Image (tube, rainbow, N blue to C red; front, side, top):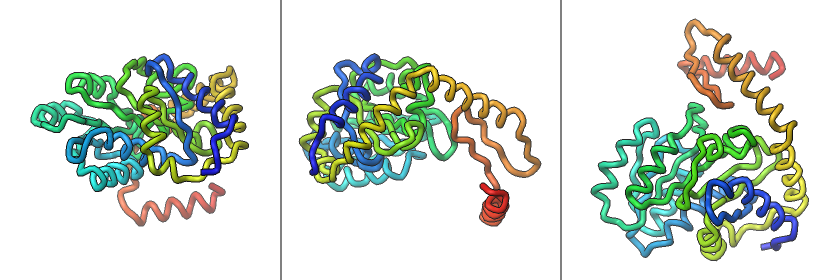
Length: 279
């Protein structure tokens, strides 16, 4: 509501360039938070079809903002919600075969913040193509750290498709704040016109866009590659050398490294000890 500046336009073009090899005719839309981008994408895309004609297939371990977006889309458009386990994407076949609603959207995190697991996006894309569905991927924990240039999970998996809607977060690896949606130009134009969380939010200050342009330059630079290599070395050290007698370490190749402490009491004690140690 406070305006779209030249800085915002430059940032969106730069963000779109990160995904242009993976989404044809791609365009980016910048948001002040990831929560707003997720709400806008899901509710806006659900409105591509008339009331009662949309089905949304949502991974069970999706982030809270995706869960809320799916619920809101159901209220607004009478969309049918079907939950699935990302570790068993084959289960989608039976549901999609029986689905008579013409508009289908598969919604998944790229890196799951609960267990650090990667979504099987190659399998999900194959399913989306077979049943003519859109595939919405939220790469909050992958953008900036996955892929040779840090472009995210689409680069890492070498995925290409016009039916992908890609969402990246700019408050994690990019180190500032905000988020963005990358998709075909026609989808982005639709969200500009129909995405209520986008339309009725105050625009992020232009200074944030300028800072993020610098962040993107670092991500693609030799310095960015050095930082990613360092991160992956730390992940390897943790996975190979950290051993626990009673707690459960979860296998993960991403920056999300869960440790299951088995009880609330253990979690509170660990937090207290870490605080006393200066963490």
